[in-house]
Amino acid sequence: MKNTFGNHITLTLFGESHGKAVGAVLDGLPAGVKFDEALMEQMMKKRSARGDISSSRHEKDIPEIISGIKNGYTCGTPVAFLIPNENVHSADYADIQMKPRPSHADYAAYMKYGDYGDYEGAGHFSGRLTAPLCAAGALCMAMLNEKGIHIGTHIASLHGIEDRPFDESCLDTDIELLNTKLFPVLDDNAQTAMQAAIREARDNQDSLGGILDTAVIGLKAGIGEPWFDSVESMIAHAMFSIPALKGIEFGSGFDFAKMKGSEANDPFAYENTKVITLSNHNGGLNGGLSNGMPLRFRTVIKPTPSIAKRQKTVDLKEQVNTEIEIHGRHDPAIIHRAAAVVDALTAFVLCDFLIGRYGETVMTEDHA
Image (cartoon, rainbow, N blue to C red; front, side):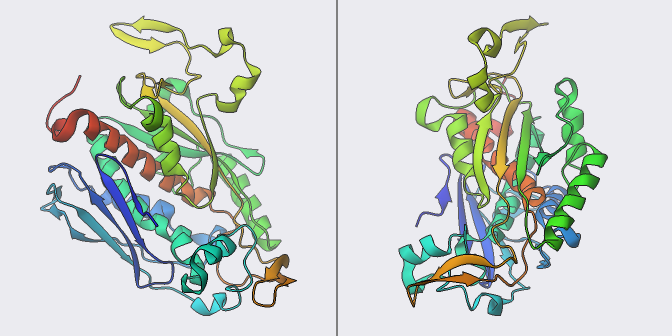
């Protein structure tokens, strides 16, 4: 099992859903990154369960910083975060070890780890581990904000209900708006409709999924690598660590299949002395590198697999077909909580690229 990701900075994840704690270690950040406590609190709050549209497992989720930060700034040494698990109901999972839940990791994990695996609350496979991802990502986002790079993600659609798209002419305003909202949409009417649909799914013992749309502004041209460590490769690698995320596309993505080259190409032009493209079908990326335009990608979040409806499964001990009713506290939709995790992991990947390009001087020099 490999729980460390990154090249120039690394992120190591540890813990289980019902263990004593979950946590992360962020290693390689330069000294002098300001710790933005308000930003971390906001990101943790956006990821947290709240109200009647999320799981009733409510955790405080206040990261304890064990090392690496002093007097409000990174020291240049590993930053360790620890988040206690204080609200667990392990008895809810007594029946599932030998009866895997459909579309969960239960069966695959049992085949890998056998009786030694921790299945309570999905153990190490749980979305609970996205909490320390957000804590680490908040520190990376603080570094990006100081460099004028800003990230925002909204729910583009949920079960056919659509938010208004990003306004390409004022992405900075839209991103600023999203960073103040706990339910990440741009249109309040979409929020009302989406939340009503989530409640209806909950009442029907079901769940919903949807599509997230992410924008990054302020990223200069030439960041990234060709081939295997392209910006697309590394972002996709990070995104698929989110348990419910099942697909990603950059720019126009799969719509390229409907286009001609004359429609899909992004013509270059000068705007004052800056090179821009007149469209952004490629999502701000060419050849695995940033081209100076907004970085754009979309991800799909599947419906939460833990639903209260009776479902078909197998009994691994008796080796027979059977059915299962899932008890416990689960989200009727996870997409509104996942948006903060997408932002956090995007911030980590971009910090990794920036440090790879500029080294420790990334915080002290203006790299034009």
